[in-house]
Length: 446
Ligand code: UGA
Image 1 (cartoon, rainbow, N blue to C red):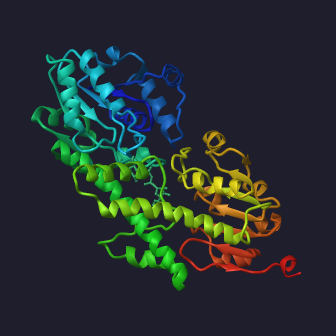
Image 2 (image 1 turned 90 degrees about the vertical axis):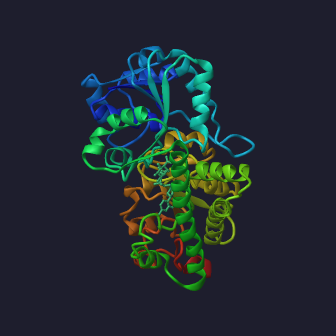
C-alpha cells in the first residue's frame, strides 16, 4: 500500500520509517526543504536509537523516500497521515491546530482519488470532525474518510513502541476506512497486538486521558516523595511496595524532579483547557499541572540548602540536561528551570549531557559544556544528577568526590544512596523522597 506522511518531526519520521519497514511504500513530505535534503542524503535530524539504520534499510529497499512535493506523495496513496506539530497556543494553553488544518486543506486541494486522512498528531477531542469539514469545504468532490490514530511512542524507545505496541488505537466512522487502517497495521494484527477500533472522539480522548493519567501517577509519587523526606520513609521502598499490587503496577512510579518533555506538559494543559471549555474543569489534571511546577521549585530549594543557603560564588556541575535519557530533546526539561536558577543565583555552572549540548547551548545561556563527567565535577561545590543516562548510572563516585572542592551530591533521579555517597567520601547527599545527610567539612568547622 502507498502511504503519505506529512511532517518529518519526531512522530512523523518514526512512524513513516516504521510503516515502510512493515512493507508499505511510504513517502514522507515536509515543507522544510533543507530538512528534506538532509533526509535524502541519509541524515536523521533527531536522535533516536536505531532509527538511522532502519531508515537506511528501507530507503535501500526502495520503500521509503522524502520530498517537499505533496502531489508526488499523494499520487496513488490510499492513506495520508498528518503528523505535524500541535504546540501549546500562546495565551490560552490549548493545542494550536493551525498546522493540522493547513495540512488538511492542502490534502483536499491535491488528492485526486479516495483517500483516508489519518491524524497522528495529538489533537483535542473534536478535531477530526473539524478536519473533515475543512477538507469537504476545500474540495466538495473529493471522496475521503478521516481516521484518528494517536501515537503512544516514548522518545528513546520509539521503534520498539511502534513495532511492539501495547495497543494501536484507530478511530473511524466508516467500514471502508477501518479496512484501510487494518491493512496498514496488518503486520501487528497478525502478531496479535491489540488493535482497538473506536469512534473518532474516543480515539482522541484515549490519547489525552492516557498521558494525563501517566502524568498523574508520576506527580502522585513525587508528592508522596516529599512527604517521605519529612517522615523518614524511603520513596523507593514505598514505590516498590505499592507497585507490587497488580492494580497499581510498578511503572511510572519513579520519583524525580518533575515530569517534562514534549508531551505530558503540553497534553495535560490542553486536556485541562478542553475541560474548561466544556464547563467541566478537570480538577485532578489541573492539580497535577500545578504540583509538577511546585516539585521543580522544591528541587531548587533543595539545591540552595546544599549550597549553604546561596548559589553565589559556587561551582555547580550538572549531569544531564535532556528531559530523559536516550534523547536530545530538552523541551520542558527540569534542567530549563533548575539551571537558570543556579546561574541567576550567581553559580558558575558546568553541564555534561551525552546528547543535549546542541540544543542546550541555545536554551541554557551562561553555562559551560563539558564532554566528560569527571572533568565536569572538577573543583565543584555541588554535583546535581538531573537525567538518568546510563553513563551516569555507574560513576566512580570516589573519583568524583576526590575531584570536588566540597563533595556534595544531589541525586535527583535516586540512582545512588546515602550508603554509596558515604562510602565514596561525600560530605553531603540528597535525593528525592529519601532522607539524605550533610556532614560538616573540616574547612567549615575551622
Ligand atoms: C510520553 C508517553 O510515555 C508516551 O506513551 C506518549 O506517546 C508520549 O508521551 C507522547 O504523547 O508522544 P515521552 O514524553 O517520550 O512519552 O516520555 P516518558 O518516558 O513518558 O517520560 C515523560 C517524563 O516523565 C520524563 O520527564 C520522565 O523523566 C518522567 N518520568 C517518567 C518520571 O519522572 N517518573 C517515571 O516513573 C516515569
